[in-house]
Image (cartoon, rainbow, N blue to C red; front, side):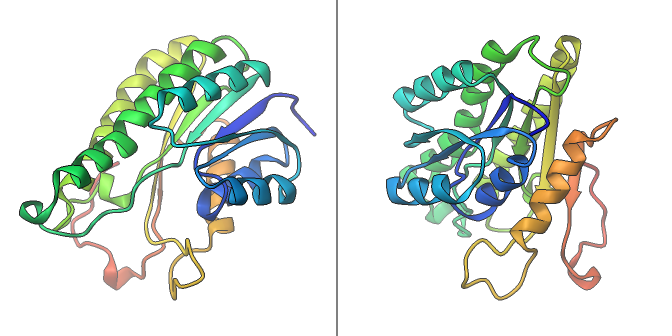
Length: 231
């Protein structure tokens, strides 16, 4: 191992989060998080250099407290906010209050809360300390039937960009990642492989200078918008 510090990855018991945790385990210890105890245990047993696990929903204050405690214990220098609720893909008028609240609380409020907890525990620990927020191409491109989902992703984008200004003064990196379609489940017939995306994130964060705004667009050219949006 190149580094005795640790990395925490939310929603890392499967999918992209799992691949990110696996990639960072090459150089760091990792803290795994997920809501399903069986899946978290499976990830713990298959990823090398696991420092600890946190089972629970990141919206739960008790889970946030547990994460903060383990970040202190394991000298966490990188937080990767990967947890998110997928877009419901319906008109605003058809969304329920619960759907709106779930999107906002998971995709934006929890990311801010965890970033604050990390910031409080990691100041001054390492030149490579930082936060990686896994956003979405929807955080750059406006799309139909994604109004609330877009609100959370554009909000996360603005939060990250503004936080970066103050964080750089404390030696922190803040990285935004905007991927397109990823094969998150075996049922996905097209999209980028999670290992491929995870490696781009790792390389983009660790290099000097690091990628502040990383767009990972795996769409064929004909499916990309004619108008280019600036991250």
